Structure formats: C-alpha cells, structure tokens
Image (cartoon, rainbow, N blue to C red; front, side):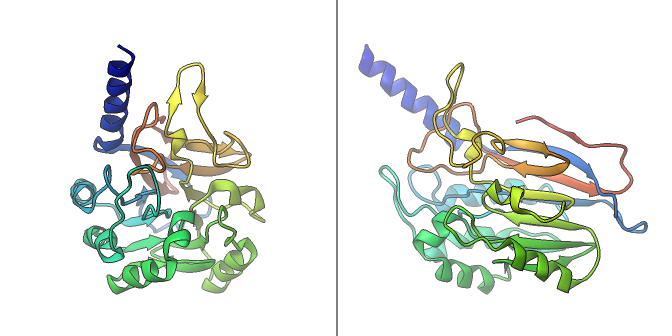
Length: 276
C-alpha cells in the first residue's frame, strides 16, 4: 500500500511538471512611458531547464509553438536554459538545448540572461549558440528595444551579478523607461533606484509546495520575499516566474509551470494580474 502511494505521488508530480505552462497576465503602468508609444506586450519565460526526462528538446518545441501563438512584442528569458545535473537527468548537447528557442519570434526580438545552471554547465557555449540564432545575451549590460531600455543583470546565485555596471550600461544607452531582466530576484534589494519592472525566475515558485507545510525549500536568501508571481516590493514591481522545467527532481506540486505576459503601458488605470 505504501509503495502504491509512493508510485501515485511520483506519477502525479511528474504529470504536474510536464503539463503545458499556464499563461499568466498583468498590466503595469509605467510613469515615464512615452506619450506616443503604444502598450508593449512582454512575454516572460524562465528556468527552461532542458534535460531528460521531463524537458527534452521535443517538449520545449511544443511549448515554443504554444507561445508563438501569443504574438508578443518582446520575449525575455530569465536564465537556466539547461540542467547540468539531477536525479536520472539526461543531458543534451547545447545545440539541441537552444534549437527550439530559435523558433521564438517577436518584433523586438528575444533577450536572455544566464542562470546559475548555465554558468555551472558552460555559459560560453550556451551564449555562443544563442547569438548564432540572433538571440541577444546580456551579462551586466543593457540594450534598447523599442521604447524601453533592458538592463540584464548576470546571475546573483552563482556570484556573477554586477548591479552598478548594469545601471551604468543603461545610462549609457540613453533615456526612457527601464526594465531589469535577471535570473535571481535577490538582486532587487541592491537596485540603486526603481525601474518599471524586474523580470526574474530561479525560485520555481517553490516547485514542491504543499498545504500547511508550504515550499520544501527556498533558493533565495530572502526567504519567500520574492517567492512567486507579481510582487510589489516597496513600490518596485517584480515578476517571478515558476519556470518551465524542474531541477533535482522532475516533479512539481502546488507550483505549475508558467509564463507571464506583461503589458507595459502609460495609459492603463492600474496594475492588474492573475495570481500564481
């Protein structure tokens, strides 16, 4: 009986982990939005974690096909494209990991920052493959896309974040609304000034979250402060995605895979969002 219960528990957790991602949405009003700029729809992905058994490249291709139908203006990916270790994990070549992402399409392109697993695997090879497919990689750098300036902070968890360098890079790009893309939300308290929004991942929204007990672990030094979803942290809007893949165990409970479609605008009346 105990063995049957364990089998059912694992099967349900694996099903949860491999379901199609939920598309959550929110609108964020940007104070310094350009008067003549239309709203900007930003699709936010994180923690793809390509590895077997739960996220082979074939499954990622199916997810990419689902996301292309959303027709975003800009796509941002908050790191951890690969998993270099895990229980029973199958590791794929970097070219196989990145190939499905090359099919993502948006008028303002695709922008990526590395995560800790990317650094632990081979961040140079991953970045080279991304750039080969025309995907922009930011590591403590900045770029303008349409009306906004994107500052990409490298991964805090693996010790590669440089917030001052990122803000200096944004200032060098010019004036306009700013957003931050970073893998770990733990960089947020280090920001010298607020930005329109911070897009992050890393927490997996707990990945294994149970009633009463809550999340079994936290990968943030701030506990659940940046745990999941659309967060107002002292006036700073932070979006922390649950991610697409898993780490360590190919299971999810209480934290289904998700992506966020964030509309940045100066014309809306307030901030809205679908809860995680």
